[in-house]
Image (cartoon, rainbow, N blue to C red):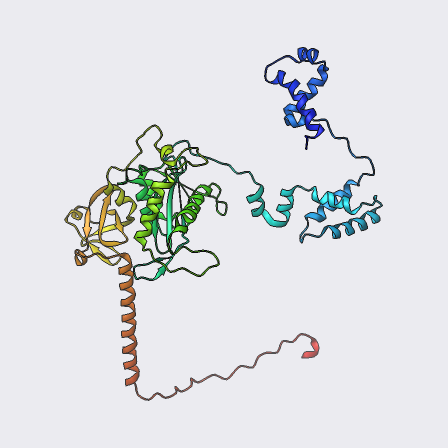
Length: 474
């Protein structure tokens, strides 16, 4: 099927006009050479500047016949955009009634249908499906790509479509946290874990992303300039904010309920689910019975790491035109890094709190931490850092200067987690409540027979004064 006549005319006019637009031939000279009036060329040029080549097509003459009254058109459009959405037949009946009452020319059902179908689809979506549907379908999306590696990282979690065995041999569905480099699409780090996402799991994924790995095929490392995350509680935690401040990178949060720009990290989740997990035992398929889990958490961790390093990083990415590995390496460069792994662990894997140094040490979570070096800081305010997985020791800072490691003498040779302390507190409260109940029961058992207490003497009730409203009430 050939091109419409209007398109052919526009193409022919462009072949003439492009000599002026692209080569700078004066319109006067062009008019003489092409036997076209100079005023005509000026009109073509104005149309081209306003609407491009398509605007060079001749205007379509309006159809002859009765014109629909403009107010009736607006009325039909208003009916079509109203909620609940009426059918075209219902709109036609209402339009016919209104036209008769107003004395407007009658319209046919086909005309009503043409008016309704001619409405802007975006307007119809906004009217009937709401702002969210309109945004996801019609709003402009700003597609941004970082200018270099490690300029922007994205972090997010997903629950994987696979069942594995937990430490007790029971079926469990794991989670995956991924740290993705926006520029190269390389996975800088990840963390596979059981249980809900937490600030600690995010910190472990960041640790894997930041510090150089032992695998030479996985060179991605360093500190980002920006970490782009959503509004999950683990990403909005004070711990992560403090870590970003200490490691000198900025956290940017996506707009609530509008996670634009998150498609890059969603695609890597989809790739892992469909290309790797689908080939592993325990993969969950919608509509089928849950499979028997076979893999353990370390085995799944190894499988994901090998897939990312050996396959995903090495193949050409359709959006960058090169592999994530080569794109991240570039011409060779040195990423920013913490001075030591101990510095990184201290910042990422510990939580900062403010405390006062007392004569007997630093008190925290019901424990007492001591060190000879604290003697010079009695009654001073210090910042302590602790690992929630082991609070038998803390690191103490004074005015951003490291002082010492203080230990709890009662647990110096053991590992005590914050959960252990919280559990011990709960157990102790239950024990105390039980002892209280026992003692109250003893008191109750030794009390003599009880008699009802004599009622307290009551004064005779005063007669209420009747409210006199009318003279006849007296």
